[in-house]
Image (cartoon, rainbow, N blue to C red; front, top):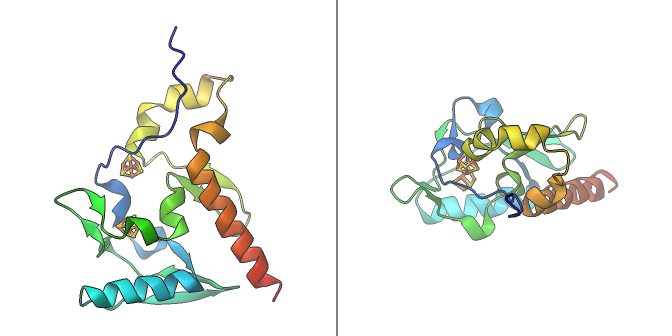
Length: 147
Ligand code: SF4
Ligand code: SF4
């Protein structure tokens, strides 16, 4: 019997930093917009964002993210990347605040049976760090919507 706890472990495949359409691009907080703009200027790029309300913005992004290092398959701004990126493969629906696990993630696909049918699995442990990012985003959103 395998007693090793299942913990999400990114494979650094190429999928989640490439956006087929803008609708797939990360939703970010106002503070994050500033950080991303500053980081983009350092590499000679300008970023675009669409205001969604309550302090949330949609990053207007199609194709590879400008911060994605294709050769190393790594985010070049890992320490300051937005919470939406930190929470992936968890996805947050900002209308219902439901959390989904993305089946576009290679790791999720590979562990799908276990995620779906192992009823002893504690998803809060499997996605501990990612859930922390969800909580932080949710708190920031609540604070903003109360001001
Ligand atoms: S900021 Fe980093 S993690 Fe987020 S989409 Fe860009 S490269 Fe990927
Ligand atoms: S799709 Fe999943 S495994 Fe691949 S880089 Fe993104 S989070 Fe990691």
